[in-house]
Length: 114
Image 1 (tube, rainbow, N blue to C red):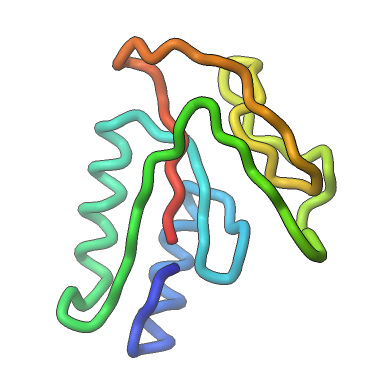
Image 2: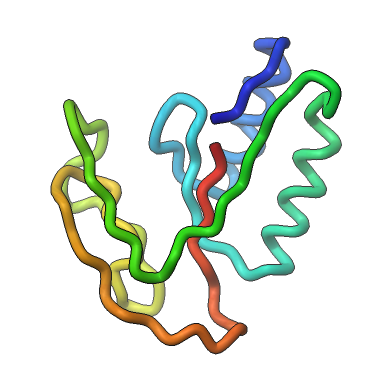
């Protein structure tokens, strides 16, 4: 989760991340990025947050991500995060096993900001 002592700064982080990723919860964003673009996004976040007070985390998701969604879902079941025609992550309701993907070191990876 993104956490900030300052609601204005938290909103600025959210506006910034909305340019690059999907907001899946109030302070959780998911997107697909090459390594160099994730580095640029993180550098941009460093200019927004107060590193003494705020907590922003970024986690890479495995290519074979399994997601269990409980409770009322904000996305319809057919909302998917797709890369190269392959469903990488289901954002909508349901439980799905993701296909195997080879990691050639050059492909994009899914990342979650929380």
